[in-house]
Length: 162
Length: 103
Image: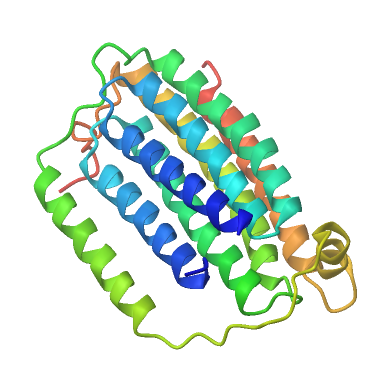
């Protein structure tokens, strides 16, 4: 019951925050609404009993990516001119509405095999043994490390002064 | 009616649709990146919901979410670096004006 109430509150907050992100003309306030959006998504992970992912969401998204976005907004100084819409506003709205309708149709007309098992309570140990254990995702972890290294080098080279 | 898988999937679809609208209709390149982050988060919610309600003890969905977060962080870093480089050379980041590779 408590989880249901928490879900509804978080769902309303996250949808309102996302609407603020796309509707505010001041891009800096849109970025602040994005931080609120990320925080409530961490709360939604907690209602889904994904405690490790909630912590990672706060550390990576709220802590790092939003700082990066706000820094880029300040470096480009486009706060005054805002973020106006381009000429595809109406078609974009129609495409989004069609997408939402199609997904809702698919969700409500599918039969999901809901499992009745209780979820794992602390997921950190299980996630670690999945990632690094026998038959796990260790190759993908190493590829992700190489991807992060390439992204760091690429970002440094792109913004370096000539 | 208690909250189930469908609620989370619909929430994820609503967030994805909002992000899609923003990504298609914004002029500012940073705003487009922000909307792409919202879309990635919506996909993450759907994956965690599948992991919670369909395979509660396998956790494969949460593993995928970890990799999506890695790729999203790399994408944000490189994307913002490209935007800053464009701003240095052109003085604006209006995505409708950056059409050098458009034929």
